[in-house]
Length: 407
Image 1 (spheres, rainbow, N blue to C red):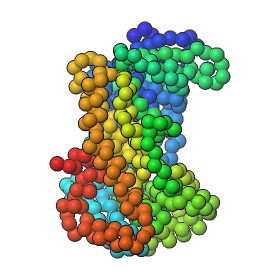
Image 2: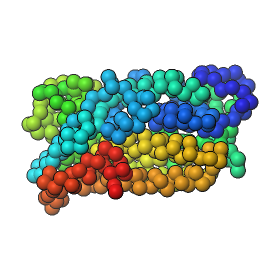
Image 3: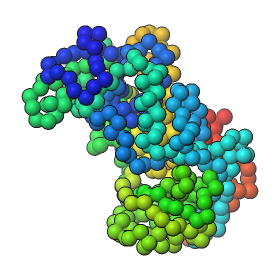
Image 4: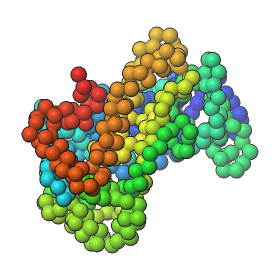
């Protein structure tokens, strides 16, 4: 390597060109999980991010982690038991219509169907695990990618140094990588990304239930959209899906008025006595049709971002990272950007990826329409899940393990 890359947020202003096998753009949980999974191999790995290290430390978001994701994180030595709240059962129903089903972890011989963990806690655990188990992984933070070019042997990444980003004249830094992995999160406007706007916003908050949650999650389909309650410590992490104009009104309400609106949508099975500050974000399906290009691959939210209903998005991204690491570690050519390896990875991910996208998008479309015939059809579907164990087991396994649910 022509110059050692340092785990730092600042460098000298000199232009340089360094070389690695795998450059991962995006040091969020998916990117860090990939770096950690590659620690067992010979690849020289660089983790890049436009943000400062530990920028996630104040992130209030909660992640729904399937039991299968816990298994992957345990294998990586990055599972934080103390930060995880177990989901032992999930109650699914619709407001204003019949039909309900209950999915229970005991039916599958596991302690929990999944877990809820704060984004910052998972990121901190992965960050510490890289320090402990992947000391060869190099990191660069506070670097903006200015461009990527490729040739037959490598990709070249041009980075703005922190001084240049601040308006000074520091020369850009250039890094050559056999493979560039895009894990930087939800793609912005990009002609390669297909976008479907759900015309919904998600209101997120933490609410205090009475009685306590007893490790039960709720998925309640309402005329406004899905309403999910996920146990997190003593509270529920709330995802309340509504039309954009209603989201604005809900954000403007005081705490008691907001809790009254939540009670009206959820029903009488629980009461809610306190709420954290609320936030809102728009919902859309974004899918990159082509996962690989010469010397480049996209994983996690950079490859697809899903509606939060059923909590599939992060779990799918983690499986992306795991499968890519397995493909790279099995590659005997020594070239991390080998086209045959990347094509094989893309083919291997097709079933899980398309299945997760179709599963999540289908739920939103079927349960997002309040026409009476569809309400009846939804009720019959929920009733079928309740009285036909094989069907319920298929849905549960799909949520727990992804494509491994399919024979």
